[in-house]
Structure formats: C-alpha cells, structure tokens
Length: 254
Image: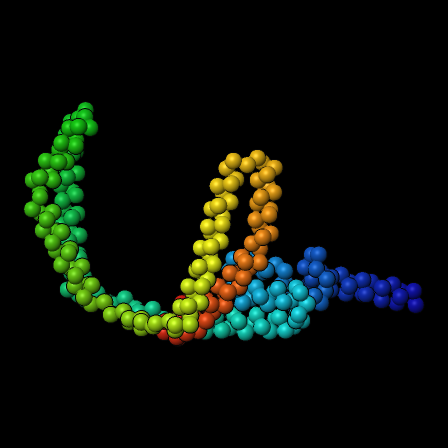
C-alpha cells in the first residue's frame, strides 16, 4: 500500500512539471491565446484604425473579443487593398542583349589598354605623371568613348520605348463644399500661426519666469481652437478620400 501511494505521488508530480514546463517562463497556463493589445499599441506600424480600436478597448467601450475581431477585419481589408501587381519589366530582346554585350567588350578592352599604359610607366612615376598618362589615353581614344556612349544611348531609348505605358490617373475636382471647408480650416490655421508669431515676439524681451507663464496662458487660451482644427482636418481628410479615391487610385492605405 505504501509503495502504491509513493508511485501515485511521483506520477502527479511528474505530470505537473510537464504542464508548467510547456508554458512560457513567467506566463500563466491558459493565457497564451489572448492577444496582447498593450504591446502593439503606439507602434509606428499600427494603422490609425487599429489604434482607435485599442483606444476604445482601453476606455472600456468594447470587449477584448470585439477588439480582436475588429482588428482582424481591418488587417484583412488592408491586405486585400494592397494586393496589386506592378507592371512587370519587359524582357530584353536578343538584339538589345547582344548590343549590351558588345558595349561591355569595348569598355573592357579600353580599360585593359589603359591599365597596360599605366603599368608601362616607371615605378617611381609621380601622381601627376600618372594623371597625365590617363588624360593622354582619354584624348587618344576620344572617338571610341563617344561611339560607346552613342551606342548605349540608342539601346537605352529602345528599352524605354518597349516599356508598358503607365495608366493615367483620372483628374477629379473636389466639390465646392469641400473646397469651402478647406479654405475655412486654412484660415483658422493662419490665424493661429499669426498668434504664435506674436507670442514669439513678446517672448524675446520677457524673463524666464514670464515666458513660462505666457506660454502656459497661450496654450490654455488656444487649446479648444487647436483641437477643433485637428478634428475638422481629420474629418475633411476622410471626406476627400471618399470622394476622389477609387480602387485604381487608392493610395491612403499603402
């Protein structure tokens, strides 16, 4: 009976050790499947929509399950929007490849000839003498260099002409209402900017203590105005995207 109890205790101890060993160090078993929202919040790679979900979760407006579902839907939507193919580069023709190979052979031959000329100089040749030899070689082979350049320019034009034409973006005009809203926000920003310039002029002749007080007073006086401009700009930006973007012209999600 005693041996049976000892064996049972040893088996229980072994099973508990295996269970805790499978969990990560410092992690409670059963919690590994929960998404870690706090770690991803604030990272530059997180989109604004996802950040808004994190904020709603932090404020208690939604549950962790709803947040996980919304984030999954946002990421799937973004992946679908980014799933596009760039125009493939045209395959070089045999004629173009042969022309590039011929140009390379000519350039290699000139380089080898220049190297031989420099090796023929005395070991004690100065830097000026070597530079003079290089300039003399360039002058003697000027026509060959020009010929290589002309051939390369011709091949480059052939490659350029074979490229597929890029689709043109449609020119879309904003509505008069959006234009008026943009002008209103611009006027508010300019007004706030002028107030900041006036404050800077006053700060030049103020003491350190007065500066802190003036800056604090300015921030408090213009806090609501600054927040209003920020919110209106965000809403206007969303309206503009909804009006001018299509599946072909969408760039805000890239």
